[in-house]
Amino acid sequence: MVEQTNKIISSNDVHLFYGRNEALKGITMDFNESEITALIGPSGCGKSTFLRTLNRMNDLIPNVTITGTVKLHQQNIYAPDTDTVALRKEIGMVFQQPNPFPFSIYENVVYGLRLAGIRDRRQLDEAVETSLQQAAIWDEVKDKLHESALSLSGGQQQRVCIARVLAVKPDVILLDEPTSALDPISSGQIENMLLELKDQYTIILVTHNMQQASRISDKTAFFLQGHLIEYADTKTIFLNPQQKETEDYITGRFG
Amino acid sequence: MHDQIKESLLKKSRATRSERRGKLISLFCTAIIILVVVSIFYFVASKGLATFFSNKVNVWDFLSKTVWNPGSTDSHGNPQAGAFPMIIGSFAVTLLSAIIATPFAIATAIFMTEISPTKGYKILQPVTELLVGIPSVVYGFIGLSVVVPFVRHTFGGTGFGILAGTFVLFVMILPTVTSMSVDALRAVPRYYREASLALGATRWQTIYKVVLRSATPGLATAVIFGMSRAFGEALAVQMVIGNAALLPHNLVSPASTLTSVLTMGMGNTVMGSVSNNALWSLALLLLLMSLIFNLIINRIAKKGEL
Image 1: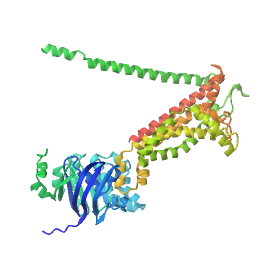
Image 2: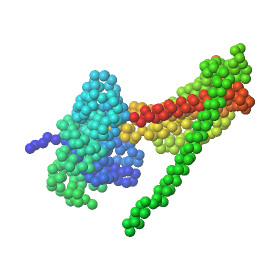
Image 3: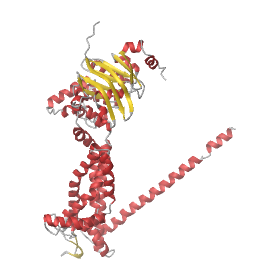
């Protein structure tokens, strides 16, 4: 079987320091278009930090230094002339805690479009419907689009947050443990949705839940103490890991 | 053996007893505070209402008539207790100073929380605290020696009046409104900002579309709190407003506020006289207004919770 894959993001020797503390110790990895890549590893291993280097969210934290390159479509996003605002429109992000704005569901979804200066009511309405449908929550909220997003359940809020990202039509979606604050049913809904979205978006997912990684991802990367230990097809990682550390972690013998 | 356990379970433990004692003490203190508040209200109300019940001043006349001379009577034999000029004066200085202070306070708060949260905050935080701590007589004194001449030279008139009062109150409420606005902005969760930036918003877009919008109830509370402070401020205003119980025709003619008439008059009237009762009516009005300000703040706080 010949798989046609395109590198969309490639990082090369990325080091990240919080002050003097080195949190990422040279990460080199490529992400393929239209695939789900899962980043797994114990807490503090650097997987979330690495995820946040991909849309330069770490810039917001004082005292962070980053070396190496991260290329999106062959462009180094750490080049000095990078427009982070434009970058973040191409690489959307969903956070661990559902974080809808304290506005209506509608206003949450169109937020990114309003930033882009879109005023046309029909265009906004359409975007709201499409994004909420893609996020598999349209049927639940279509009658209360103008109610506060905070009145929804955690799982619904998280899907609204995903719809909010989809509305901007990014190329890549980063998800930082998107289901760790949710119950299994909501998590399952979000997993199914991610599988649906896979064809149109490149999805990079940080997760603590190894079943989740094995269920939905095409590729899995195992991080440990700031190193990328192993990165391969999900099947290989889970059934036939090449590194002892990976095996220990996956079988629960970690420690 | 069993009896021992039973006995120890039935007996009140030391922890239970000390908890009871703590509850009693705090209940007692709370009761005293409530008693004090209630008796203040009762006292002010009984004195203040006497103007209307014993001295037969019409409530509507009190609120709308413009002649304040409660010691003498008008042609109908009723005391001339028209508080309208003071009501206008109080509201004018309060609203004007709040209107001027709000943009400055919110801009400063944005600077302290969003633009320079480390250095700017470290410098401005003690400055605002210091400004809150300056006694009002000092503000009044500065107002008298700096603001009043400035107004006189720039806008004409004697310099005493609503404009001078507004300027002094602006400086006085600015730190209060600023520090409360800072609290309101800091209470906006970090993840709202992150979510906004991650969607490709600029910092400024994030500030005015998300941070200010989420903090609106808190900011409104800050402004109303400032207004309530301005409304109740007596000494500093009294020193610069000119203290003429007349309806002001412009911002630079001498005027008066509810508080300034109170501080001017309270030493010069005899308990139980009409003039004294009339002052109590003004005090009652002030008390009611601060109650209203508090109710508004509560209302906003409840709305903000959602």
